[in-house]
Image (cartoon, rainbow, N blue to C red):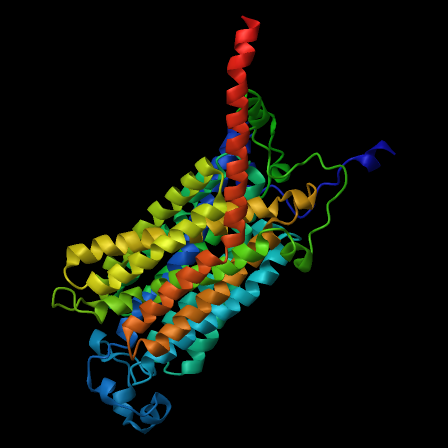
Length: 525
């Protein structure tokens, strides 16, 4: 009868074969800290590969739609012009400057924008369901299926190059299916990391860990740019094979939770007991001592957690800005004269990586500042407000010289990606373990999916609008981005006021305690 009172282990979380093999070869169990290192490395590489496959589209855009030949003079939609052109003009072109039907017509830019919104819409829609599944199924399996599926459909987009496929709907369907599998990534990696790491310095740790977003973007940009000269299909196939391979690595080596591999938490608990008096005690994000099996938190219940809605809506506008840069920055650079010169698609792709380098710095800086201030909303809002002048200066003065363009792009990336990284990592983890949940740990993937899923809707809308209005004015695009950054900051106003009020109250309390301490000392003397 006593066994009935013991926690029931989740049968879905089994020890990965690779971990078992390593322990068999060593002859001893892997330590808790080593498991944490494995988790950080594998989840970092996994999500970096997601972003590497996502970034390729923006690099190839200017090759698919060069706007450099007589094609740009056609004002009839491609569906008509392409079908009426001679058969020989529709054959596979091996030249970079020829473009690729159906994207090299007068409406090519808007068609590419439609591909972006199709991908991101399905991605945002799938995010909600992926988080729901992530709290109920083995995260290792969910992540593996998502990575292999992403690799398959990313590669199929590139296969269109060798298959001489010019059907818009082929690329549309492939992008939508790729977006569906991509949606499994973020809720899964955040939930896994959340099960292994506590709250102490979470903003800084996750800020550094979240560099995978920018590292993935940079890797995708460099790989896709390097392969363009061999044919744009390779720019999709190679990243697709990379993420599929890493998916297999995740399947064999990723420990989903300490309980799934029998890792001992006592090592970590002993370190916590050695903390200095007065220092914040690190609480484990998930508590294995729960006497009964927890029920996953429902979708509506997760929305009601204090802070989820404001941060989710803030991320809507934050990702609108970030993803517009993700998908359109290389295209913008190739169509903007810098110091009187236009850069090639490959050079523009390489240059755009500096935006992501700034994003790495911004993510780490935002996490560190929010830890020091213990104020997530103040940090996120401040970065969004600083992004407004950064966007203005990049648009106004980025064309003067290459050096100035690099500096302004780096600064813009820092302020745009800083709050985006903070909200999708530390804030999501904080809210997924909110006190209102009363210790229920099975909300992390759902809360992460709600916040990032809502943000992904904005990420879909930004590139879509850009595809249409950029043909008229890039200044209008930047005005839209500045307005979105302003709204993102304003949406956190209530939380900012609450944090400022709490800080003032805490400061006043400390001041009163300090004013009393001298009198106590005198009386004792």
